Length: 412
Length: 208
Image (cartoon, helix red, strand yellow):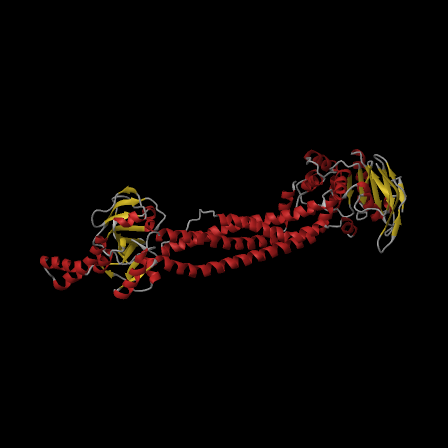
């Protein structure tokens, strides 16, 4: 019967207040750890996708929306921009390279993005199987897409219009899986990639079909229609890497002032987003800490109450040979044990919240958080929680230390 | 085993007591009789080292209690003095066996399940080892507290009003158990009580 087991037995005997204290501790620790881990992962994820992209050009609208849709594939596009204008920009001397993106379709909730092979190279993607596209309607799958949809090389699927599932399906053309990427930890993992021509084809054919139905033109006219489409073809956004910081100074202003397009700088927009999220995160963190403070008070009160009930037990223990320091240690041990359990439950709770949020955000924002992380900050929470337990127990422990056995036994 | 000389105690704003010198040898039994207010409990607490006398000395097993430091006194009491209280006190969160083992671990001795089982068996409590102390009857509790007092093989067993809460039959029974247990385990026994029913039971008695 060592002191640890005795402390544990005492906690179990006082079940209600023990459970209350643990619950409060767990909710406090859980909230703080959730904010820490979710914040760190979002930061990490945001920074990884943004790397190497100096500017995003797209249709006019909210710059944040443009960044979210073009870089992170999380929001709806702001609209389309004419290919001809984009091409002019691509040849600009201050542009090191640029990546055109055409998107707007999806398959089973995963976005189909038309781009160039350079897009894959930009994120350092490697093929797990197969190879890049060489023709229209050849698709390369991100690792998460391939795994979650169970698609393999050679499989066929039909994209549907829009970014939400169960919208109008493009029955005409089927994509053909030619490559599957290794996990990159970037936005690519959750995308279906193909060439821009495929996206144009699907949407162009729509227009063609409509025209044909109206005018019942012959083959020659169809050729003509294609030619016309060539001129007003559109892309959704252009990711730009500058040659020098000069580009940063000149190009965005030029584009915003003189073209129908909008230029947004990811670094600036993401900072704004952090500030917005930061307020929410800070609020959650403060609430979490408040709850931890309340937990400390709860531990303090339940120890005081429990010791009041156990006054005779303390005197008995002294009469059996326990020194005052031993009683002091027992009370501290009970509190630390309580806080250690609260910490463990809190981390578990934080993880559960993270998984839930990951599940929800995966469906809505193509954003996945992992529950596997155990961050240094979370480890720091353990000594902090134990310190709370130590402080909450000091006064009760000192009371136990000062137990006057003779006085208590006389009044029994 | 126990010897006192010119022991006296006075409360800061209360009565003063001077106690007769006591001498209890190995395996002897001493009954200390006194009415309420006669300083019985004070004497018992002085003998157990729960408080220090104003004057005089208590010697247990050759050690003068006043020479021991605070935690030294606690450890000495744990190992050499067994206490039986009027109201049997227990750690309520653990079972009978664990309560017995605590008497040893708190005194700094290794746990001894064999001794615990032996004592429980001697006191007719074989079936009670895994029960919680609250579930026992008053008489059973008193017997468990006797077993606990003997867990550390103390040289001196001090009993404070062990029988006053019991009816006649149980009173004699507990007195008998105390004496039997103390002598079987080689402990001197001092019973401090106002219970005059015990007067005929024990020959060696002192009145306060």
